[in-house]
Length: 449
Ligand code: ACO
Image (tube, rainbow, N blue to C red; front, side):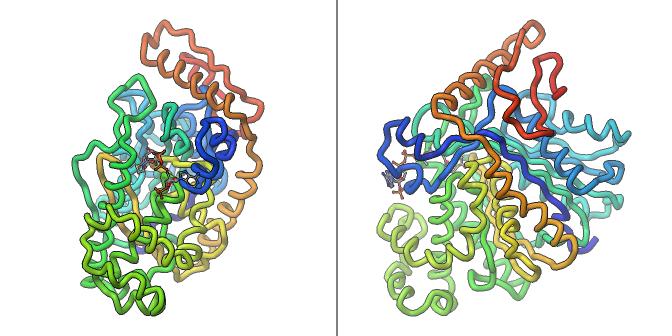
């Protein structure tokens, strides 16, 4: 199969959000810490009415409806998530309800887990299947879904919720190119050892260092591989960059780090991209090692300042969902790609650099080639509705956020105790949810919304 990649896509984010300015006041932190320091505007939140299975089903339903899919033509279904509600039963098995209705039981693939990276693993598995001799001519579907919620404290404003569904096949408008650079290690930057809680144990500063280290390694490795294998390489040959986006400021700093990479490997190309004056500000850092650079705040500030004009055109358009919904974990990078599509800037011929990161850790840098045509137009039309959908949400107050969070804590406790005897009645609001949202009706009568 040729030109394998993303044929169609849908995104789901919840109807309820809190305003980050209000959260700053409520948490008693200095004004601007979440909005300027982290770069976030709003954060999506779900009550006990939804869980990972329901949001995965909601986004799958959206994909089926928006593209009028015949589920008999799907031969692979993969899920990426880190929001486990069961140690054995996969999220994919819940999604099979839709395929059972279509009498299709023949679907390869299950769940992929590694923090925020599982969606990318699911995507690569599916693309590889379509490109392999095992492919039977049918489409693949990848669903990524997570509820990113943190306990009270510094990490809470970096939460979020969401799901993305992708249809994978040949002749795709978003072709996943084969050259990839991975970086995988054993780290404890963010993990969830308590199976009765949704809250991760997180070492924030370590997670950021791990993210930057992985980015440096992936970008430099990808450049070396690309140089050998194809005509395009370096920052100047890619048109847009999309990152896993825990919060916008981290993405802005990450984009700036690409310039640091280019400064070391290909200063001439970098100078031609950013101009002599900007280049002179960076030149003195040319021999600083990647690990030393991570400790140098002046270098970080200089890089971010020099990179700002490029960031505004090459990366900021991808942060619409991320700034307004927060970290969606596995779908985060894909929410960025869909945000970029929603601007209508992609008309065919563009190349996107993509960085996926999951704590623990797994990371990959890869690229997407955009192809013009009706399928791209349809993707642009569907994602063009994202603004309207973001604006149709309902703002909740910070005390309501705490109430939603405590409802979730109680729901998780119930499901981790005796499932059989639990009398669980979700009590979060339903009237304000979007039509078509799957909701939890109770522990026995699971998803009949
Ligand atoms: N106005 C403007 N900026 C401000 C203000 C203010 N009033 N107050 C603080 N800031 C800035 C700080 O200077 C800092 O910016 P800098 O890093 O550029 O210097 C930024 O706001 C954050 O402030 P900190 O005090 O460093 O933040 P804090 O310790 O409160 O926590 C963190 C931030 C670590 C990101 C935390 O929210 C967290 O742990 N989040 C979860 C982990 C995470 O998302 N990791 C990313 C990769 S792994 C993943 O995807 C889960």
